[in-house]
Image 1 (tube, rainbow, N blue to C red):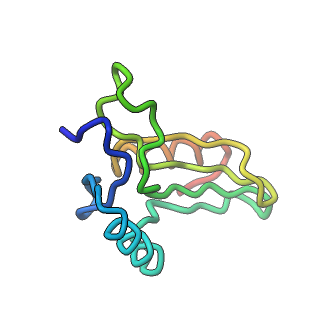
Image 2: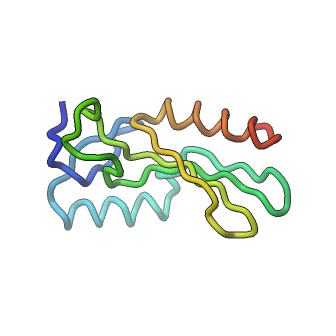
Length: 111
């Protein structure tokens, strides 16, 4: 189990692992941004609407709260005309993929 006090993460394949060293975390995030490892899925629904799901590298959940033992390190963002109109968080790559697909379907698109 990852300690609730850890806020920064990298991926080992699709699995989030704690990275407490800020320099190592920044280096991994920079490289992952360049080679696309952070992207779970992107779907353009129409010219004005897009859903993007990525690994954030930071726990976006309420740390140390009961029921939140796993970090929320994946996020889907819905963009309308380039502005974020909705976000949803996930704890695993698989949940992020499923959440992305469900969100896209709800918005009338297909993955």
